[in-house]
Image (cartoon, rainbow, N blue to C red; front, side, top):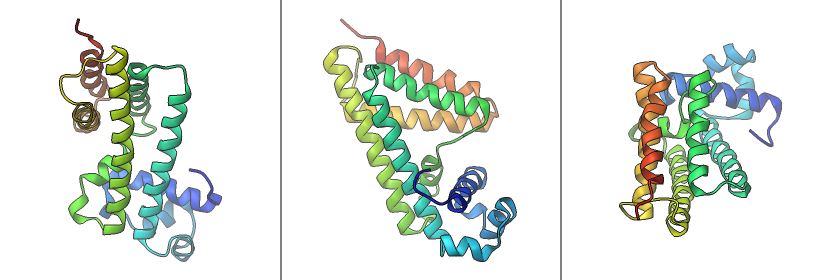
Length: 195
């Protein structure tokens, strides 16, 4: 995460891990204090409330994702390969345990219980991600490398739902291979160009 002090960075990294483990309501500043090794008052200095902390976390997560997706777009990879690179990224993260779940997908599952400030940030992430996937679907169809059975936006939303569902299934079965078992046929279907 960029543009933060090292203590803020540590707090945000810890909060992300705790959210992935137990959700928004599954952690407190006391938990962060134990892991990071600072007093709760120090956490409040950086993030006056839990809402501020999680809102900042999601905003930074979105900014980091935007940067990574833009970098992927500047690469020589075509639309199909960018989608594959995205699913492969998560397969590696889930496989090595470095990131077992997209924090925004997890928070989206808790929307009814989240503060409005956090909801706005989660929705902003999903809008950004949907726009990126929709753009790839449009480009891929135009270039004849993706075969869509619905509109680009509908295919993008189905892609996003499948990827996040695959994360959930891998977690439910405690088997990282489940993620690839679900996402590989998705990419295969999209790249099976019909003539």
